[in-house]
Amino acid sequence: MAEVLVYVDHVDGAVRKPTLELLTLARRIGDPVAVALGNGAADTAAALAEHGAVKVLTDDAAEYADYLVVPKVDALQAAHEAVSPAAVLVPSSAEGKEIAARLALRIGSGIITDAIDVEAGDEGPVATQSVFAAAYTTKSRVAKGTPVITVKPNSVAVEAAPAAGTAEALAVSFSEQATGTKVTARTPRESTGRPELTEAAIVVSGGRGVNGAENFAVIEALADELGAAVGASRAAVDAGWYPHTNQVGQTGKSVSPQLYIAAGISGAIQHRAGMQTSKTIVAVNKDAEAPIFELVDYGVVGDLFDVVPQLTEEIKTRKG
Image 1: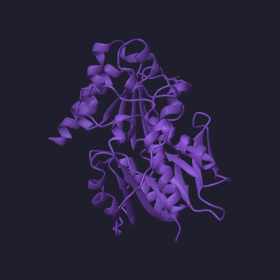
Image 2: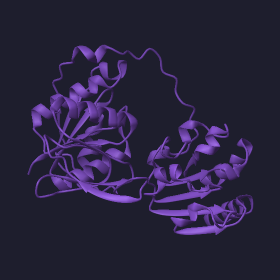
Image 3: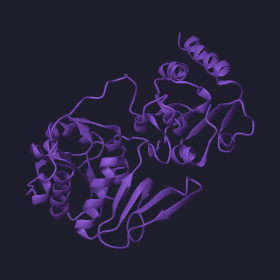
């Protein structure tokens, strides 16, 4: 069976969930070969093998941390030359999409971004995308070169499938461009203890109806009871009520959780584009004509300041 390269997103050896999802998809079209780079790369092998990686190519050079994405592109290009894969799968983060685009250009291949599914086809892997603000679903394939596909988090359930996971050193020669932009300082983002927005299984978002930064405590309380991430609409972010890093929408982050709760969000097309692929959508809005109700699975017409606290208390009671 043909091999499929999977770019590993990890933090000091701890593999992040989107990579495990990629391994699940990769097994549909070939034998997954993982590429782990940077500090702790070798420590990823056990988790990757548990989820189907037949081989793990690793390189822990300092360049991956000291410079921006080009060293990682150099490494993926080296892996591509060594493996001659049937496809390359990359997590659909901002960095992942830049790496994928640069790699596709270098190897003369087509690219598909923000896929929500990947399956085997007669003429190569077929990717499913949600397009035009999630109004349509398309299936497409790369017609030239090795398909480079980025996949949105939460697109598939993680499935364990133990494999050999043999670790091998990846020989990488860095290009002149690799050291063109150096990272001079890093400031850790203050942790809220909540899951990463794009990877969370549950997201609770607030919009214009929250009516103030101080009122986001109502949204946060529900999120914390559910173990959820907190999102915000563009209106809430533009008003300064919540950080831009938490914005869900076309100009923010795209999410696809198992459960999405929208409180005080009207459902403008810009917001819908970032969350419409969520598996179950619940909305709370006092305007019965709000566009958000057109796509929800469950809708509550009411004041969020009445509904959300009651929901939070009910969850507390059932947990207790």
